Each structure stands twice: as structure tokens, then as C-alpha cells.
Amino acid sequence: MALQRINAMAIIKLTINGNEQSIDVDPQMPLLWAIRDVVGLKGTKYGCGVAQCGACTLHLNGEAVRSCVTKVSRAAGQKVVTIEGLSQNNDHPLQQAWQQIDVPQCGYCHSGQIMSAAVLLRENPNPTDADIDVAMAGNICRCGTYPRIRKAIHLAAGAEQKVGKNE
Amino acid sequence: MSVKTVYLLAILLSMTAIMAATFIPDTERSDTTLTRIETAAAPIRKDSVASVKAFASVYKVLMSPRCMNCHPSGDIPLQGDDNHLHTMAPRRGSDGKGLYAMKCANCHQPTNSPGLHTPPGNPDWHLPPATMRMVFQGRTPHQLAKQLVDPKQNGNKTMEKLLEHADDGLVLAGWNPGEGRSLPPLSHDEFKKAWTTWIKTGAYAPLNGKLLQH
Image 1 (cartoon, rainbow over the protein chains, first blue to last red):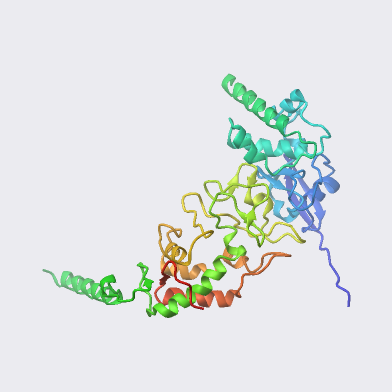
Image 2 (image 1 turned 90 degrees about the horizontal axis):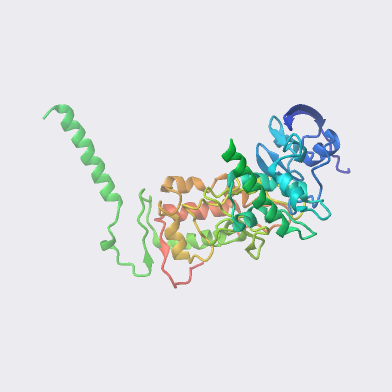
């Protein structure tokens, strides 16, 4: 008898970019698929599917998880933030720095890059080059934009600090 | 002196006598091939030969990739049966759970991810913390045995806690490593038996430079 896989669908409630949502999916479904194909937020990218490249990075309760290997069930009742929800008007200091320095080449990996960098700056507002290298080592860029990524993170860190001083 | 005070003193003296009878002072030892490890909780039956023999099995398991890869000598975990540095070079961090966007649980899920070359999982995936690094990599049998029973190096574990540690969730994960990964050289039952025997026969450490008896 051939193996039969039964996909049990379930209503999963989670908060995505500040909005409570209920999605009817297999709880074993990768969070990435649910975000892209069910919710319709396409900013988070599929890269390798095995947590090796970082293209699918989003925030789960503030941590930069790899959504390609994270099951939807892990996100049930939790807070998810995608690149679309990082700021209201695409004006997060990292997004502004990315634009100012013109970081991307093909751009495919950069939503993941920015989501990882956001965790770095939250935990270390004034990172050194070494800190950046450690934090960003899991995000691969086939175009090799690493020097510009590093420069943009420094720029965003400075901008965040200026905003902090003015407040 | 009240009756209550006398009664308490009698209990105290009895306990001291029992404890003293359980320990064998180093000066009474004549064995020159072994180094006995001082333990907070006295083992039940001291048997240096059986203890060292059991530790040979324990050591083989602890030095296997499934155990040693998360007990590296540096601050980057290891991967694979060849113990290469973890791709992406994630760092230990102060709590052993990684740094910034490179925290263990960002990729390592509560359970194994399906498929080859996917992250193995456990709800509590982490390295030992920076303040208690519990290094296995590069340790001789003598060094590792001494380290394992030293509360200052083993995570403040008593002998009882050490015995229980054989069934710790992350220890057990070594025998459920995910697709494509080798298992430790002994079954968990065999490992637990050797671990328990080693501790309950005195947790003796083989002397440096001596080959272990198998």
C-alpha cells in the first residue's frame, strides 16, 4: 500500500505586520509559503529552502528567523513582521540607507539582508565592521554587494543615533 | 544543655560519621595508574577498573560528532562527521544561543527539519554559555573526565544532576540527528549504562597518556 499523506488543515491565528490574521493552512507548511502564497506578501523571498542563504528572513517575535524552515505552527499566536511591515512608509533608517547608497544589484536577497540588519541594530546600535560581519554572515548575496551592505548599516546606525539624540 | 540540643547534636554527629565513612582520603590510595576525582556526592561502590572501563565508552560517545559539534574549543559550533566549522560561522554569544540575526533558533526549529542538509531541531538548541564553555573538542579522556565532574566546569551539576543529564533533551537529540547524519557509536541505552556505571563506580579519570582499556 502506497504511503498516504494526510494534510490536516487548521485555522492558524497570527499577527502579521500588526494585523491579526487567520489563515487556513497545513500547520506543517513553511511560514514562507503562508506569507507569500496565502497572505500575499511577496517581499520575503525563497532562496535555498534549507536555511542556508537568508533570503527568506523575517521577524518572528523580533528574531530574524528563516521562514523557509519555520513551520506555520511555530508562528501561531505570535508576531510576524515582514519587510513590508518594517516601517510604515519604507522609511526605516536601513531602508533609507539602502536607497541612499544604492546597495542592491539584482535585489533578490535584500529584504532578508535588511531584516537581519534590523535585528543587529536593535541589539547593537553602533556595530563595528566585525559585528556586522558576524550578524550578516548568514545572508548570502550572489551579486557580492557586501561592502555596500556594511556601509549602509553604518549609515543607518548613524542615522538612528542622530534621531535618538534629537528626540 | 536541653534535651532538644543533645538530640540535634547526636543527629549531626551521626551524619558526619556516615559521610566520613563514605569518602576515601587520597592518602589512602595506592593505585598509581588512576587519578580519583573528588566528588561532592559519594559514589555507591568504588571500582576504579570498572569506572575507567565505563568511561572509555562514555568518551567515545562524547567525542562523536553528535556530541562534540556543540562542545567546540572555539566559539563557532562544528558541523558534519568531519567536525568542520559551522557554515555561516554563527557565534556562541554570552548565553550560548547565538548573536544578533544569527541565533541558533532562527534556523534550528523545535524539531528536525525534513530532508538532507536541513537544520536539526530541538526546542532548546544552544551551545554551552560563554561563562561555562564545557569544551569537549581536544580534551583527553583524563581532562574530559575531570571536567565532567567539576561543578565549576560542568554547569554546576551535582553527581545526581550528572546522572540525570543522560536523559537531557539535547543529549537525546544526538540519537535523533536528522537525515543523513551518523549516530553516536553506542545506542543511548548503552551510553546511559556506561555513564551511570562510570559515575556510580567513582567517576575515575584515566591517567593522562594511558590508553583506555576496552
